Amino acid sequence: MVPSKLSFLLSVFLLALPAFAQQQTAPKPKPRVIVVGVNGMELDIIRPLLLKGQMPNLSSVIERGAYGKLRTVSAPNCPRVYSTIFTSTHPEENGVTGFIVGGITANTNMLKEEPVWSMLSKGGITVGMANVPATFPVLPVNGYMISGMLTRGKNCEDGVLCAPKLSEVMGGDAVYPKSMQPELLKNVGDFYIDCESMPAAGDLKGHETELIDKWLGKVQLIREQQTKLFDYLLTAHPTEFTFLAQSCEDRVGHWLYPISPFNVGYNPSLNNVRLDAFPNQYIAFDKVLGSILKHVDENTYLVIFSDHGIKPLREFEEKDPHAHMDHEKTTPVIAKHDFADGDDVPGSFFAMGPGIKHDLRLMGLAASVYDVAPTLLHLYGIERPKQMRGRVLTEIFESPDNRVAVKK
Ligand SMILES: [Zn+2]
Image 1 (cartoon, rainbow, N blue to C red):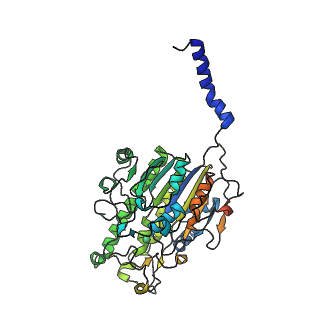
Image 2 (cartoon, helix red, strand yellow; image 1 turned 135 degrees about the horizontal axis):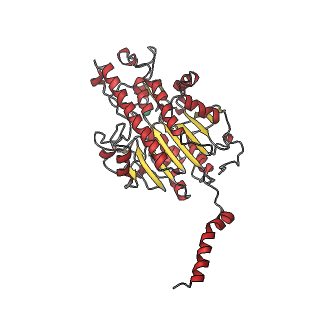
Image 3 (cartoon, rainbow, N blue to C red; image 1 turned 60 degrees about the vertical axis):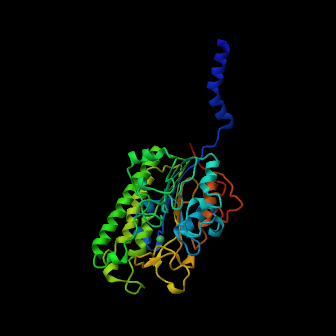
């Protein structure tokens, strides 16, 4: 038995310990970072919307931060670029070179280089991820992970450009930790993990208007589910690092890009039906961004990026080795992004937060997809590992040393 005097002293000591520890070794508060990936956001399409005031939330981010084009890899497609972003290594180095690698749908078991979420987890930073492409099956993190594009399931057996519901996932886990899945089903519902697949040319013929409207309705439903999911996660499971992604924008662009008769692939019965479809995706995305911004305070970093843009067809398909690597399948594609020269379809980058310059425009293609991970690590004071090919985007900071300007 512990003598009462000693036990008292012990309790006083224990009570005093937190205050003492705070004074002596107060760990610097870790910054809060929210990253939003928008698959295939095309600057040529969003610029007029920004000018017309139709994307007020993104406009406010631009005013409060830095933005510009983001150089992407050659023949960019989602898994190829996202894995490059995760690891800051070449696709050939990290192992995820496209949708299909060695006859198998790209998956996390193929990753040969350490992704940024693993480095952050090891650094003691809490990590939350949702709907990020090429994160299936999910991997353990210091927090939670919900997979995104390339999740396999019912009516989406190969996982390529289709949408299984959470309850219909097959061939691996879509949620880490597993115990979170019933909670999500209860509080968010049985949401679609990825965007809807595009209708086939044969089905479209003679039913263009009806099928386009129906498909866009489903896309909007998926976006609403995603908005609810993101809001739930940011409210009920706040983490120091949160990475959310959307992929419907890109898919709409592939077959409903508002091309003109001059463009290759122009088909008035299809391309004249909903000229507003593709721009409207960004107006809708801006609303999603608005709901995320409610969780962003003056101490939070917000990074928005697109892995690539999307443009009307511009290469001789029959000579292009990448011609059939993207979303083509059976849908009449009128725009794409896996052009041999990635500089034809740069992505975009937006960042705001403590110590980040305001209203700064990055010119040219100085910032690249390789730079995202080193810059994110920099925010947490973690040095860029040797294998990373990118650099810290120091030019976006007021001072290069001003890495963690948390006031708290
Ligand atoms: Zn695409």
